[in-house]
Length: 498
Ligand code: ATP
Ligand code: MG
Image: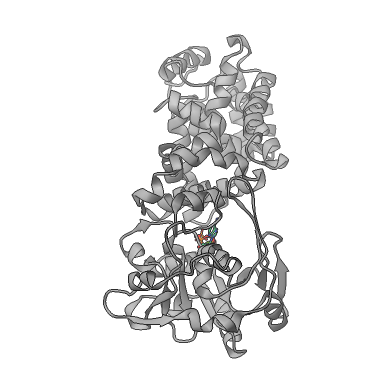
């Protein structure tokens, strides 16, 4: 595999410079700590830019999650400028500048791809004028040739790049110029540079136009870029879900054939990406996009297989509702947990594993836990999920039969279980999708807000009558067995009892 990014394309070296009055980025929207880093670098004679998702989000009028800085200062030089700075990363060396809880990531411009090959081989064609013509912007914004600044950044670093057989970059530590730096970016919308020198935005690949058109476009040859780093396929899905951008056809097209490359991605990285997909406020959209693009089949094969076979089933409806609730929690700054996410995602596959056993065993805790372990085992094959999340998930599933059949004073002890809240959330979701008794879920809701005396009364009443509707009407007067039978009918045989 040729590790060049560009195939027939050459590296653009001309930036369209969008002056302050032609873009909407205001310093008042930039974190004070990021501004401090930018100004400090500039005062010391270095170039300093905001780059990546923060520039994209500022242009879109969104609040950036984090602020990244790109500079021509070497990591060691950055470290000398900031006392609160640590160098990190084996794969890519970066400087982290700490301000309380905020970390500003400062990366040195990196040499990469076609330009790197050109440096290495005298026979390789050096990018020519034809790209220069392409990158001249409409509207006559200022155009600069950044080639001139190249020797300023000749740090004499060894050009260190390791690529595996499939074209995946394993290590890349060669420093370069801002125009080369765009090759370590993925999409054009993520490759804009906001200069602290004059507050202009530097655009080497029509990223500004793409943001305005709400379009995701990979820089360079899409297949090569996905082979270099298959996680870019997941990032495409994530930005489609998060920003509502459309993936342009050439960027979308190779995903269907290349998605199996995700199998070669380190499991810890896939876990991190999964959390970014599902726990940052657009989880329901991520689920839809991952399924549409065939990526869920590689990321979480058992979840995808369930979704394909049981479209619109109660467990799938519950998963989508659970993801929507999670998105709402993120929006309102309430905590979300990986263990509850996996509880939702795996509910369908776990139910299927349970239903393979004789029906009389479905509500046994041992059956449920075996099913959780079976489903998790399949997840482990792809991604590293920390053991504490799995233990918590097992508790949430194991508590379900206890919640569904509260028994007197034992119910009060269940309230104090460290996983009660998550287990109750699951019960409510199950009830809302027709997979558990609504009256019982409501009873637990009332129990939590009741006084100690009322709690004692409620737990005794339910032990005596078996009814979750004590004094609240007779509809729940409760033949639980009959209800379970009805619920199974509603699931149409496709869903689990959990
Ligand atoms: P988010 O809103 O999730 O923070 P982001 O675009 O800022 O989105 P980050 O993961 O924070 O994403 O990465 C910062 C920038 O680094 C990206 O905008 C992109 O330019 C570059 N980048 C990150 N990951 C990759 C990758 N796998 N391949 C190429 N470029 C990447
Ligand atoms: Mg970011």
